[in-house]
Length: 97
Image 1 (tube, one colour):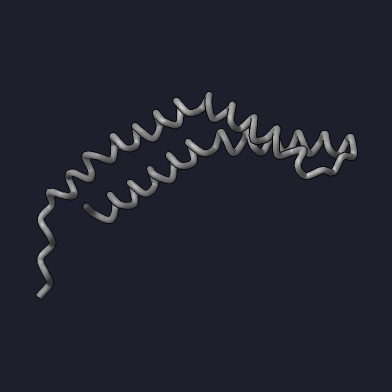
Image 2: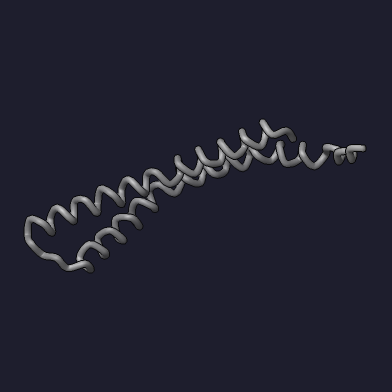
C-alpha cells in the first residue's frame, strides 16, 4: 500500500464522515436558531427550554436519517475491505542495507 493509497482512504473516510454527520448538524443548528429566535421574541431566557425540543427533533431526524447513514457507512466499509485484504497480502519490505 502506497502513500497515495493511504491518502485516498483517509480522504474518503473524511468525506464519508462529513456526509453522514452533516444532516444532523444542520438540523441541530436550525432548531437551535429557531428556538433562540423564539426566546428572543418572547424574552424567555431559560436555558432548559431549548434542550428538550432539540433532543426530540434530533431523535426524530435520526430515525429518518439512520437508513441513509447506515448505507453510506456500509458502502465505505465495502470499498475498504478489498484494500485491507490487498494490504495483508503484500510481502513485508526488505530492510535497506
